[in-house]
Image (cartoon, rainbow, N blue to C red; front, side, top):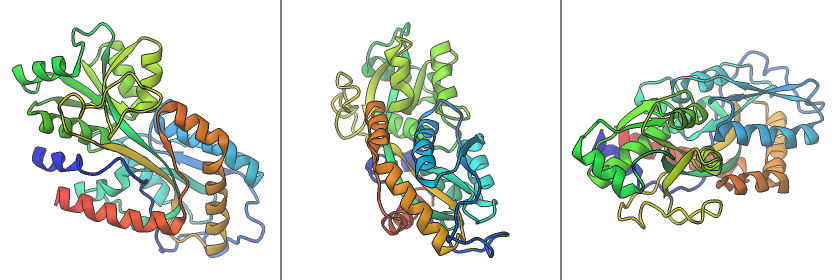
Length: 321
């Protein structure tokens, strides 16, 4: 598994996974785009409030409300590295009133035994990507990436590193970093990036692997010290933090996100929502929040994202196969 995880480092922090499907669900037969939406919507997020996925979803929700003319209730359904939220979303009626933020794990979990595949969702649009960051509490004795790696090599499997869930992208990033550096960490899963960061701040773990938006705020409050960004180049929100590659560890990995809905959405409803998502993701307000958080805002078409989803699902199949 560790050698397979190393191959994750070759997946560029690129694009956003988006998913599509065609199965019919209860309620979809009567859904119509003519007067859609006629009531408020629910936006499902797989991770806890306060994390990077939640930030993206809530920022988009505000923009979508203005365009759709309806309230959007953000509902956090955490657990299983995304399994709980994605399973809930795929089982909702395909009527357009249940949408969700869908993370990179949608292309990973099916290869780990979960009943989750891209075909179980309808693509609405690619919205962002986020490089991984490795951080330690500010009172940690580890002042640099070299310090932390040296400790992990001296005592393999003893350095605890929190992540957003077992089998999720930040656990994969932890394993990929260790493999690239010849070190062994002890990943510790939490139900989302925000709890993972909180574990680092409180001292429950010795290090944190999370997205830029999740670690930057704690670093700004002098609660965490970011040792490395696992990106091709430094990010604008953390210009002083070197990449892992700059520090001699060749690993690039990150997460990405999309907006989606259950498979089988009627074409008119799908188009209405996709247009709204693209408009929201292209807004200056959304781009400003994403950029300040260290993420890359994106706004691709459903067709582009669908093709990317298929490609990425196949890639993860080779990694976990």
